[in-house]
Image 1 (spheres, rainbow, N blue to C red):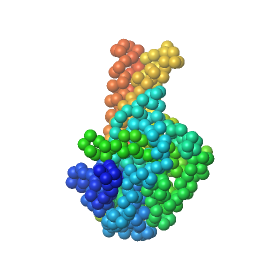
Image 2: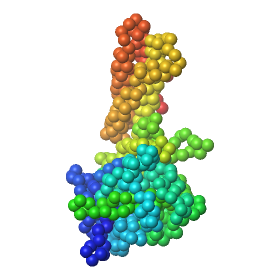
Image 3: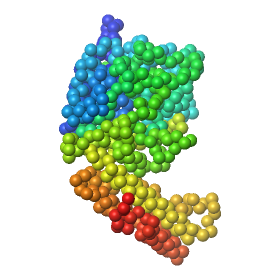
Image 4: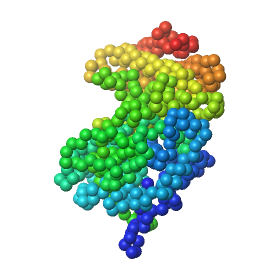
Length: 534
């Protein structure tokens, strides 16, 4: 987070002064962009709207690190009741800035020779032999380290600014997928090449976003688990005994909230270089195995939302899926707020509208990393509004809204199948899937349904809990809009059939099926222009 400066003429490294050097990109409440040091970021947190990182995953990783500093410095609520007071009274986070200023400078040196910040200096000999270009460090660039069979993409000379490299390192610690390290295990041990999945890999991380960065941090803090100190600032200086790599290591339980949120999920080492204008850059990196944590769902996954589906009889946190849009799972977030007895969502439910004010609104921001086994593919994320006292209304709106969209999509698939069977009665079995797909409007319907879904939730919140039923009328309007959109998209697909008698018949049968399904007694009530009686 703090760029170290290059060697001065006397051969001594200039020390970082955390009070002045910017390193975190931010957006102010007035829309202006800037960079802040950690100290100024905490001191001015309530004047900043949000972080301005390069990806959703990087933003989450930086928030995790900021939470770790809050816990390490004791800048956190002591109980759920105290958390409520923190939110209502907008408790300052300045004590975290004061704590940072009192820390030894060596603890925050990104290029310290023996204790580099958030890194493992034991990798130095291997870095000289096996280090790659910076593409390996940035998850969105790294692929599975086999994008080209000769790894040429990892050797490209593409230095990163030191601050960017550090944020990418944080992202590696929490989100990096499993796989094999591109380094030998002869010196440190064979297990250094076994890359385990990061703490947030494979699940959706939910961050409650407030109107300012300060409010966001307060909303996501919680009564600490374990003592405040220490923070994992470096592999070699950690007060916790870090794993070695000669044999398989059993996962360890986090010893504190600060330990949890700053855990070094990878062994990373960055090599500094001077940029063309004298700025500090990183030109070579090396990544090996890191710490393994044994996580208790109640203590360490307070933000997790558990899916209705189970694996081997056990429920699992909501996970990113390439086949199901994230917004379709929004009802699970509101269900968690409505029903949770402890943790993030129970605290959020405890906020009362009459105390926070009628205009207070938060966002439940869900972020996940889509990956094909060891290959990172893309970030998936979505923000869903929440206002105190409206969890039940928002759950109903999102649950019914996703049911309506699912029913329409299912009908579009049926209509495409009927049209294909009519237009291509003698099609070979091997070609049938392709003929149905060309007439299937679901591929355009799902993306077009997302914006109306968000508008539905916004309208429910705008109506507020003062209305007896703020959900039914917006739901009917939403359903009518989706039905009109889907019908238009179906007609556009059918228009691709050449004009002849058999294709006219295929078109008529598909449209008739769609219209009948929309008014069928099994259709969601909203599609029939009625109010659902749940």
